[in-house]
Length: 410
Image (tube, rainbow, N blue to C red; front, side, top):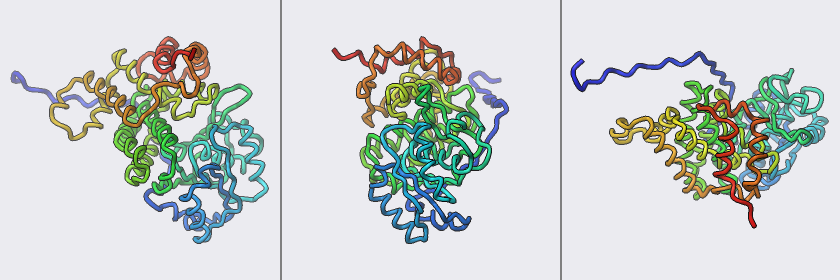
């Protein structure tokens, strides 16, 4: 081979993997208006709505409900679900008891992740006996539930695409959902016009949630070509659109990008699962009431930095390549390590642009809780730590938490 020439790089084969795509979504501005026609076409006429009580009062949702009535869909019942806290199994049973006597053909869930998970859980219990907690775990739902349509009014959690409905067990103080068979929705409605009144703080938390899903779906030990491809595209969309949407909520292009990013990230996460940021977020939410998106989102930059320091670069270099697709030729000459470091810094810059909190102080979580949080994470979410691309144990959890938990106030 002549001096200075380069051989073609080898193409690495992936290990065997599966692809499971059962999601169906209506996408685009005003696509929510199609719901009456879609349901009528398959004979679903007695429909109940479960909507976040705050979201239900917002003008875009009131207008949508009015348009549905004009289109021949008048909900039998509209249940205003509680806001500001994640649903638990007792609340799921309470709402299911309210809905069961109504004889519904289908449920429509409107709102963020809590309202959508609640709708999926109720759908399960309308066709399966007993309490919700009996179905906690994987593939324990024996019969198809009532069909559920999901209408997200914020982009990020991925409930609209997952076969998971997450609930908290208040007795054991753990969060583990109803997962697998017969949990996914019939279809979802990704309508950017329904996001324009979303509070910026809620939008930000949800966007950070999607960033965690997407990034960890690329880097997890269980990552597949599909999770890497969709996760990287979700990261690209989020890094571009989230700063715009937070500052200009009426920008429908940015909101549509966030919805698509959430959708892609949800599929990616389903095919790879989450890593340390996802894992640590669970005890933060259950024991300290940190909203789920912020609980994982504020940990992500520290996890990325720790992994780069440990020598992991491949997935982050891949993400940086997607962020700079079409950039100058010199990017292609960079080492994988250099690209990973640029991604690490670019992620921090996105957090700065969107005004993400630097710590958990607003939720009164301080450094004195590090040991307890680390113990809970190892006890409850070791599987997430094991999915990190490099070894990640309790000491690493402690170091991550020490970067984001402030010293206690005097």
